[in-house]
Length: 161
Image 1 (cartoon, one colour):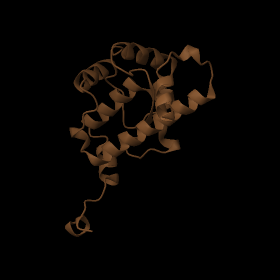
Image 2 (cartoon, helix red, strand yellow):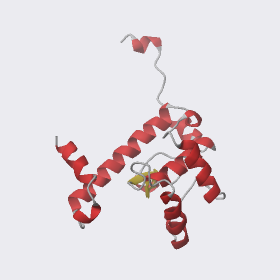
Image 3 (cartoon, helix red, strand yellow):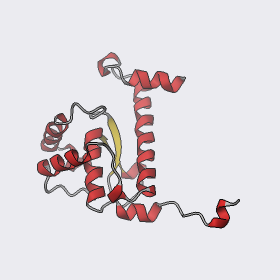
Image 4 (cartoon, helix red, strand yellow):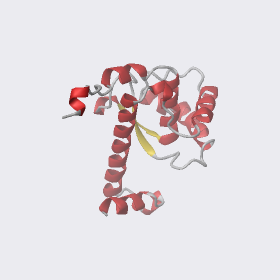
């Protein structure tokens, strides 16, 4: 019940809260949960076959038109959050403002070849995360982490235990 109350609070306008530490904690918990679910998907499904939204094609095409030279394998805050970068990302995001949760805060792996960790996480907004992760999937940059961390297949003997 507490989780449902928290979820309803997070959907309210941000200006109602100021700098409420409880809300910040709920956002962080939600972002971490999203990161864990995404990583489990990456390691369970071949990334080239993974669809994150019904809009993957449109997000990817628009992303590569707006950011044709962005190398998505290894990203830093400096690359994503410079003054020029912020403006470009804001313009990109507004193209998807009809999408639910397009501006929600999300954790993303900085280095596509590694798993989530405090040192390998960048806080971005949802459509930015989607654009980069869709590009990583389509461009083969999530293949290494998929191969390295995918769950072991069960043997017939393990299924009968």
